[in-house]
Image (tube, rainbow, N blue to C red; front, top):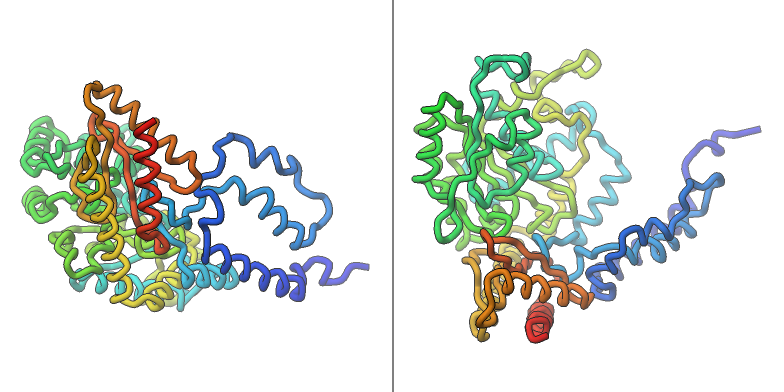
Amino acid sequence: MTTPADFGDVGAPEFRERAHELVEWIARYLDAPERYPVLPPLVPGATRNRLSPSPPKEAEPLARILADFETQILPGLTHWNHPGFLAYFANTASAPGVLAEFLIAALNVNGMLWRTGPAATELEQLTTDWLRQLLGLSDGWFGMINDLASTSTLYALAAAREVDAELDVRRKGLAGRDLPVMRIYCSEHAHSSVDKAAMTLGIGFENVVRVKADAEFRMRPDALREAITADRARGMKPIAVVATVGTTSITSVDPVPTIADICAAEKLWLHVDGAYAGVAGAVPELRHHLDGVDRADSFVVNPHKWLFTPMDCSVFFTRRPEVLKRAFSLVAAYLETAEQDVVVNYMDYGFQLGRRFRALKLWMVLRAFGADGIAARIRHHCELATMFAGWVRAESEWEIAAPHPFSTVCFRHVPAGLSLAEVNAHNARILDRVNESGDIFMSHTMLGTTYVLRVAIGNLRTGESHLARAWELLRGGAAV
């Protein structure tokens, strides 16, 4: 005869024993992640080929599963917590954030309605306002936590499309209607999520106008004005501009105050992408990079990039939540509640119904480090970047490829007598040699037709010794 225990969870004694072991493993890992190669051997299929092709018929003990994790999964992972991770935008799963994820998983809250997680909803309202204050933004912003900046940018552009109620896109859609072509404007260095949002919203990526940048890779306001004027003359409908504080490739900062002037005059939605560099506002001497953001309609910053919060956590701010709600709110009968008119139901402000309790980890990180501690850590990363850039400038045949206002440096090795194509190939080979070391992982980007290397500092555990090792490998790779 079966009993309720036959259909229940893994027993508490086994969970408790394995959980204690796992906490110890995580503590050792976070204490010295450099024990592992930052980049695994890149052999497609290697991990899958080590694993059973079929699910187990009989239950397996947690001890065996965790042992297999260490021997079969771990060797195939890229270690984003490694202090030698200098690629893309480096990040950190900090200890308070990891502890919060334990609680988030255990509680398993779904904050789709205020009722399904009152504390989760209210903590999200509070914590996003804490972040607003930390960054030096004024009152009047509505904040919500999404998974990624790509989602937040999509929400911003959906709201921009909703501003003109006469379009009635929410109800009638776009197909088979005599509507003007909608246009979105951003820098030629803006993130590809702008294009993907346009694709998803039915606007089309061809209607994302990539505005030319100046010599410091910032959007040119004169070129923006010209593009808007030309599109209006052709009967098109400009709806939004996306400015960036800290572009993905080179972390350039668009002239947001001037762009805000243009958007106000043209009655266009202004969205500011500060996914990486927005947190620089936590450092008083860097806060000027956020000038003009308070005049935007929406703004995004990712605490999972440079605010030491585990993936994923993207904070989306808007000054016009009523437009966002108009774009997305759809309350089925089974979601109606008595208090819905007096509380925030976050499901009304996006396409996702279910929502993780992400506010808990951001709240714990902000409390564990404090405003002063956060500013000190971000400031230190910028100082490390300046130091690294100094090494590059001081070395013959090496050059800095772009300004570095934050903690990311773009550079390249330029031997005399080589063509651009040869220099590009040479730097690609340098990158391969560095990444083969297992000590350092870096990435690259293209500035027009120029291939450049990137060092992005954002991990709490990265120090001068790790940058020195990177520089040693770079110089060695260039000499081969």
